[in-house]
Image 1: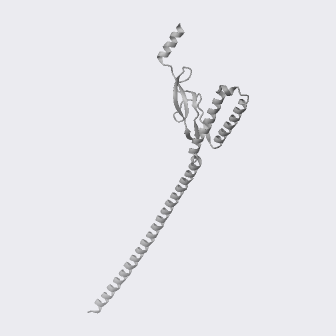
Image 2 (image 1 turned 120 degrees about the vertical axis):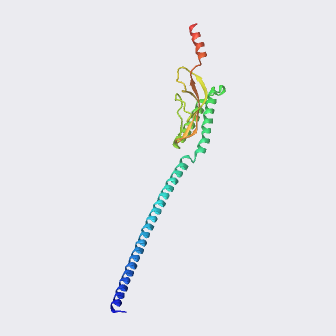
Image 3 (image 1 turned 180 degrees about the vertical axis):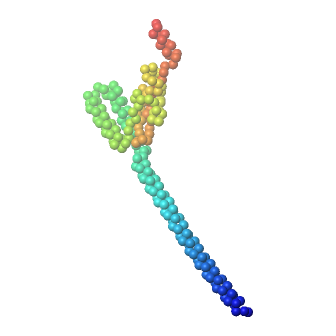
Length: 203
């Protein structure tokens, strides 16, 4: 082999080695870039998971707060509803005693009724302190959310659907209905009744 050929082969080998070194360095650099990108992605994923976890914790906190609030406000719902019977019976007893002909002649009747009235007021005061409020019904427009119609009364003086008489008081616990008010509601007189009325007036 000639000297020139040897030199050319040496040069080719050197160039090949340099190319291999460059490729190796490039490959290592690409690997480093890939590794660096993966770490960034992992950090981003971890951040997203952390944010999701924090959001879930916040939602749970709000839910627990609402449940505690509901339990505090409405935990005594059944007890409050049953307690209304005490007030009802007290008021019925008061009316029965007032209208009893035998008791009317008793000189101590007024004193007795006064004591019942004091108990009644105390009970109503306790209800109000515990956010139990009576539904205002008299002369109000009938509302099925708060009232239950027990009867209809023909009355041309009042607008149809006006509450004329409260049969039993209704109550709310906060904004929640404990029981509806039992009421009688006005309605327009029928045409036959109106005709009879007109005839009578003509006579």
